[in-house]
Amino acid sequence: MSRRKPRPKSPAAPARVQAHAVRPEGPCPCGPPDAYAECCGRFHTGAATAPTAERLMRSRYSAFVVHDEPYLLRTWAPATRPRSVDFDPDTRWTGLEIEGTADGTLFHTTGTVTFTARYTHRGEPGALRERSRFEKADGRWVYVDGTFDED
Ligand SMILES: [Zn+2]
Image (cartoon, rainbow, N blue to C red):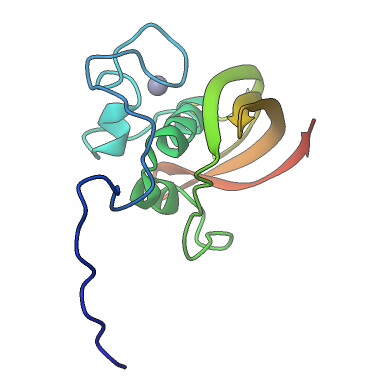
């Protein structure tokens, strides 16, 4: 291991990829008029845990918007969890539509959520449609995997 000299910091160069700016009092990226802090923000901070698979799905979408990697990893089932999450700097998530849910309530241990997430990639609009599977582990919903198609 060799130590590299730290690079001089330039105020013009952001240290890392800039996440989509979301203010606590601003609208939540997942869609409802609720403030981010009251909607997905309280799950991201750990103040609360998502009570249903759909709420977890929404909060994970919002975590992609704000680049909250720790939240995405801790809400991923250990069996399918990646080592890290790559945020594509050219992709900007622009909206989420929940199309359907099956199970995934307080009374279930598994659930599925079908949704379309819209984005722009280098200015080109696109959509990702996914049917995600969730399970409850130690009383908390986690993401297992999904089948998806992109157009
Ligand atoms: Zn939200």
